[in-house]
Image 1 (cartoon, rainbow, N blue to C red):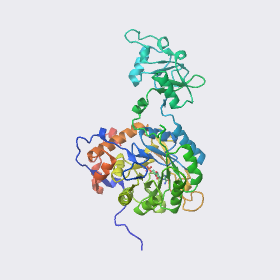
Image 2: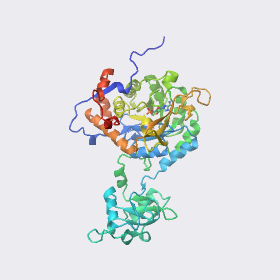
Image 3: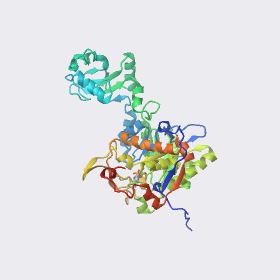
Length: 499
Ligand code: RVP
């Protein structure tokens, strides 16, 4: 006879957190979101940790090298999509790894014909005391000089004085050539006691500026996620078909962590893939997706470094409708988190878990963490930002971005859904869609992170581990769900557009 679960399959919207005592120490500034993503033994530390618990999904419409850099700058990780050729995926990893973190595009730019007043106005506007002077006033024009606050005296100089009269001209500048490494640039900065080193191309056009201290860069991106060589940490998705060829190319490109990407990971193919990676490479590999204790233990015993949880909850996913498999994301996560904690008790090995798919509201992320996830993977959330690889379009009066599932005909990622059949998608498990355009990743994520930190303070927790051990979570009835939104009032236009 079939096995029946007594509890229905539940999702995040059916739960709420009940606040704990908030101490004076529980303020957002004290909340720390560091989180492990590769397994470790009791008393040791994970070899890969995120500074914020976010991963962008292994999807064509979400995770390319640009997303990887933007997210790593904020402390999270992208898993670059694997539904492309090995060469193309390895190239994306290489681009993200080689991204020159300390090289910035100049944000303050003027021409020699501007005036001291213009310099002061620009400084007021963006706070930068260094302005690049180019022939056309753009960050990539021919470099003609640099102006810093050492070049003028407000008490003596007239505000109408032309930049060309007081800038440090190109002929007196120390500059670097395009192609130099960050450490070579830093050496020049130290040797010549500079605050800023302009980098120019062969035609003398400005390409980047490198500032004196790593510290300055770090101030802009205090959470950035760097490896030992100060490159951004980057992940990549693999499948259980062409792993032999794919993994070696990704490792050669410098990938930091892999993730087997499959809609249903409780399979012998995943075991083989994990074991291949473990036997041949020194790179952590996550596996999934699973939705229960058995699936989790199978992958962990096969050697998985983290396990991804979730089937059918993704915003573009129609697996549940097409095949009738899956589980409410909250129920799946709660059971797997419990299995993980028991496994840790029994063996002293902690295996991080990732809640993948189905996050709609920011509070779902906090709930997922409270329920035991070490990090969350999101597709729709990141697809809405400038940094995602898809087109921004205007549909009606609104801007949208394209977003399609890996199981849609558009992505044709048959490896993710294959159960040992033809080398093509026989039927679709995902849709092609739009998501509302939301602007830049950083601004949006800052808001989301503030909400998470604030909720954690409500729950008396300054770390994710503390939240997981202290959280009190209640189910909500359908009627109390209504009570949770604005109700029994007539909303004004401005409130209708707020999330
Ligand atoms: P969401 O964040 O709800 O957009 O979900 C993203 C997740 O959905 C992915 O990480 C993946 O697990 C799943 N996915 C991706 N493509 C498809 C599909 O076509 N069915 N599903």
